[in-house]
Each structure stands twice: as C-alpha cells, then as structure tokens.
Length: 217
Image (cartoon, rainbow, N blue to C red):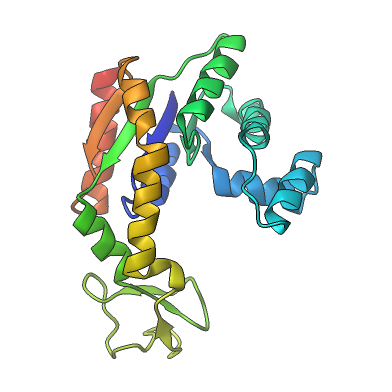
C-alpha cells in the first residue's frame, strides 16, 4: 500500500506511522528522517538542505520532493510506503501526484488522524522530558512521575521543552491549519481520505486505522 499520513501536531502520527508500517510491511518515510539521513550522509541534496537551514531559511519544496523521490525509489519501497510529514502543503501534494504518475503508481489512501484541538494542546503541553536523557518522557496527566519534576528512571530533572509550551503548540496548530490541512480537501476530491479518531489508547487507534484501510481497499 502507498499511504500518506496526516494530522495535527500531537495527534500521534509518529507512533501510528511506526506501528502501521511494521504491520503492513512497508517503510515509514518521514520528512525528519529524510533530512537527517541526507545531511549525515552528506549527499548533494543534504548539503543543499543544510545550506538553507544554516541560513535560517525554509528548505524549498523542490529539495524535499527530490529527497522523497530518491527514498521512494529504493528497493524496500517497491511494495509501498507510508509517508509521514510529506506532503506538507498542496504544492507538494501536486508534485507527489506528478511523481507517482510518472512512475505509473498512485496512492491507495490518505489517513487523516483527527483529534480535538484542546486534546492536542493538552497532550503536548503536558509533556515533561528528562534533562539527562531525552528518551525519558513523562506526562503530567497521563504518565506522571512518582515524584513531581523528577525522572523515575534516573532521577534527573524533568522540564518542559520550549516547543511544548501551550503558546508554541497553538502557533504550530495555526501553521498546520493554514498550510497542511488544505491537502485533506485536495485528496478528498480524489476519494482518498480515510478519517480516523486519534483519541483513546494507542492500540485502539492502530486497530481503527488498519480496519479502515482494509475496508478502503
């Protein structure tokens, strides 16, 4: 299957993308991983992207699209892929359509993870990360530490990242509504959108998504 995963920040895209890709036996292709891989391997595209990033500028769509094209052309993606974080706007979605058409391929579904805005803000703003190890993550409501602001694992100080503050989260949501949400209507016109409620236990959300994809075939 060839799937695009969309949804607001905090909807659980990363978690669901990993689980769905493993279950469906297709590679999970995320924009972040594409950038990191190209930059660390010092590919021409990676060097180009880094030059924009170092200057404090956004990486142009054509660079992101070229990275995605290269990744989708690798052997493990022959049977399909799950795109996470790309396309990010309508122009990227149009470019992806052109790219797939040129390779005689098409998308099977666009999975839209839907979560209430207040729930998204609560999820992200409540996160607390250990200063000693960023892999140790807690939540003031859902997974609180035994002792306030102290990591259960190593005893390090727990803190709220700047990116996780409520004000920053709401700004990120504004960007999502303005730039990314329009691709849902774009894909709805092609009959590709499958909307999934992204609230509740992680296993339940994964189950809903797999069932919906099965029905959509």
